[in-house]
Length: 206
Image (tube, rainbow, N blue to C red):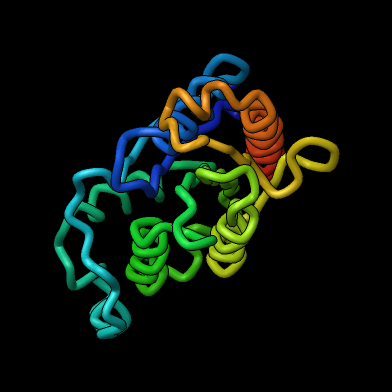
């Protein structure tokens, strides 16, 4: 492929553990590298010091980033570098993990400095639940809403097998459980295909 279609892909795991969600996001990166000309970066919330957004408006007033100088600083640079992101979250109480929500909330510091910082980047999502139907789609919808607000281009995997994004059933067996979920893997691969093809299309339009 030419440089015009080489894509920089960021995978973000919003889980406090390195188990099923970590596996899913890394599988997305692995599959993308296998099929396309991509360069990847990865960020895991596991073990990270990440403070909640407190809506202090420091970022709006100063336009120098966030008042919190924690482990999310390294993620900001990766977000700006990437052409496309895939955010994975475990399902907690029928929706996102607190770590995933914190990551999204803290992006306010980036767009306060430059409102177009994420414009036209492509975003996809995956969610892992301990039950087959336990909140995966509401969790994914929250991530897609974040992309829309950030002026990104949200994508799913399309009808007949993926819909909003990668949806997984871990059966509470961690990485082993999601690796056994053939339907989940299929939904993820369809989503990754759509994400990368959309990112390539956007890049060739620039």
